[in-house]
Image (cartoon, rainbow, N blue to C red):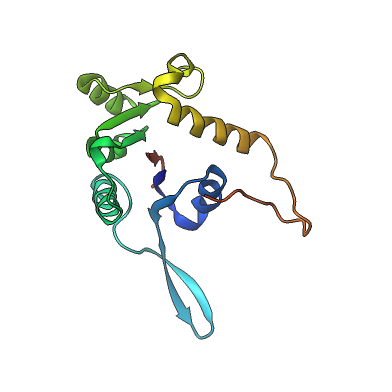
Length: 164
């Protein structure tokens, strides 16, 4: 699974790890070295991951990883996810904003809600169910501490995140 988000990479990394995400496409903050210290400049490296940039990065990632996007699924909740949804063969709108809902209805894409709304279609939306269940479990159960007292996280379709 690939998580595509407008969030900053190091902020989303723990969640991606906990969910077992294989790859994250996210914004990266520029860093500069000031003597022996690294500092964030406040600028992004590259274009912000939103709108058309989501499509551009997904197309590049899919090309680099021999992924057939016509067989791929994408899940998004905002109009900024439209380019991402339009570049895969199986787009899904999840608790969509009005603009995305209108586009999904016109195109005949599945419209899913979080947990309660789509449990009835569990068989046809198993991947989204698994992602939501993992997220719900991770957010409602505190992370177990290892021997050093540090929180442990388990390591490891395109899912858009609302940010930016």
